[in-house]
Image (tube, rainbow, N blue to C red; front, side, top):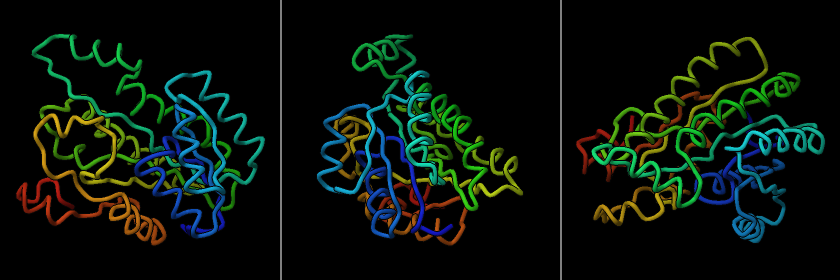
Length: 247
């Protein structure tokens, strides 16, 4: 799948891995749209990449997803790549019953299952018929190394990412023979604000690859039609006995 000459929509594209991918697509000559929940993050993204098109959207909300779809296919008829990148990560201790689940939802109104899985599934359903009309198209789902090597403090996050992996496998089979290629990017630990400081709270001193260290080789794999894309982290592999550092 070529990197240049596309029209790309990236959810959660104003920060972290999404913004780094946006930068690589722009650099290659693609037109890029990013959506995010906050206008502040979108403004910061435009300051870094002035050619970006932006849209404020909470993809966990059905009405906002549908409005995003209608706006995108009306204003960007050549849209041919959907990157399902938006995600959140929460520390949940089930020994406390529902306390952590309710606390996190009360703090920011976000739920891991709704953002990481349900929204991704519905975004895919909305956009797939449009993508099938393009000569060449792609859906790229961002899962996680934690889908394969779960961590006890992050049980819901790990479960949603394992579901994204399985969904990507089945979707790839379903879309075989169509113009739509289905990619899965499987990051190791990457230094972003995904966990909102939970790594520091757990006493970690290493925060993973930089977004560039992950995204630049991942995009090369995308261009080579590698449908399951892993970027190893030698340092993390050494720390964990290669459980989390790569394939």
